[in-house]
Image 1 (spheres, rainbow, N blue to C red):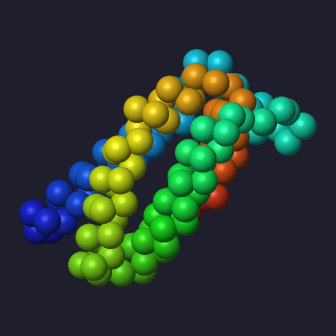
Image 2 (image 1 turned 30 degrees about the vertical axis):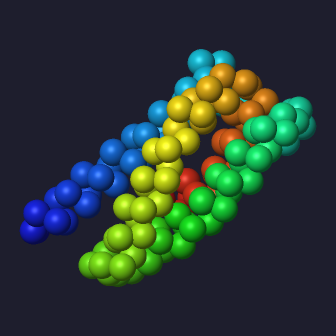
Length: 118
């Protein structure tokens, strides 16, 4: 394995840890958090954030699918890096929003489809 591949795998591993940390940021999240009958109303700021996040997630799912079948695709690997850099910019905001249980439920429900792809 060359140095680039090592760095890429390390980067993807770190990104996975970052996303996982965002998912567990709220100490009150329980196994029942994504029940459909729970109130998942969120503020307008949170809705705007989730709109951007869901667009990002769609892009990230697309590169994950390519990564699975063509891990040496240089252009796709560049896109993974760019998307990951974008995600770093809003991690602090996500961490703050995750303190709100309703937002955490909403976020986890929305993120479930990306988790299935990873």
